[in-house]
Length: 364
Image 1 (cartoon, rainbow, N blue to C red):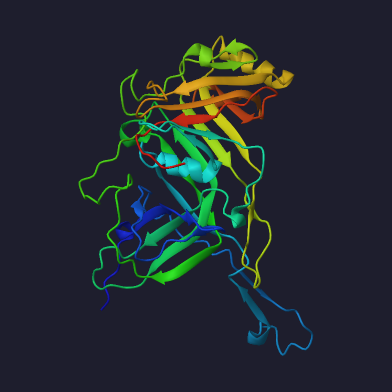
Image 2 (image 1 turned 90 degrees about the vertical axis):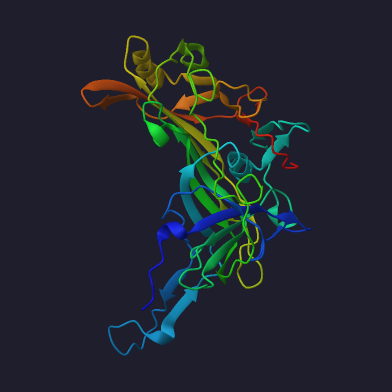
């Protein structure tokens, strides 16, 4: 009798593809993927397939008929969702896979600036940064070795959410990360043959321990919200906060197709929005009037207490946003303020919304 395979035996890895004239060259089963810390059971493939039937006249009964069925697993975009924790060594790859516009300093600690460019990328012509995403389900090779692996090819991130809750305890206060990888093809029945690497590209070590965000003191690797760093309608509302959430979306669609129907480019319609939960008090109540009046929200510098140009440093900054919903909410027995706001491109120069450093030279 066959032995069931544990869901937590699954491993997921990513590998930046090399560009050779058009698209990227996908990784193969013998490639050394970099292992990622995704949650068990969240990485399940969406093949983007369509099953439908012709509604011809001349049916023989009320049942669907074999000769009329159409199965299309080629034309649609393929996706792999995930959730997990952001670490100091895996976050840059994910941000690059979303933003595509990256500037990396030439010396350690290799500060990386992620920006929204002003034009679309021609991915089919080799522009942009694409990844292969490998999923090996029966990693333990017990009770037997089976070819049940998957590789999502020419992948970028369709969406990425970063969030943290300072009132939580243990792992739940660390920066969380979830999103959706989107690609052109999923190769199935792969038998991975190489030893995969740690997330930072070093030789795999079972004792490897990631460095997470939001785990330190009030001044080191801990996200605080000084009063002057968050202004709504010109009123400083920083200080105590309960949750922070950054939502990045590319809203990928297929631009065109190759012979046979395979997607041959990506078109992006990018957005960035935020959610910040604050207490309702004698200052933050003014956000209600700011929503009615259409006032601007300024998030000038949200950091983890480490300079973004130093190892482990991280910063989000967005000079102009607008509230998208009425901010007064109820939290149990108390009122609260939930700032939901969407980023706009400023009239002046738009600096990089996210900058971080990690001592890894990516060559971007």
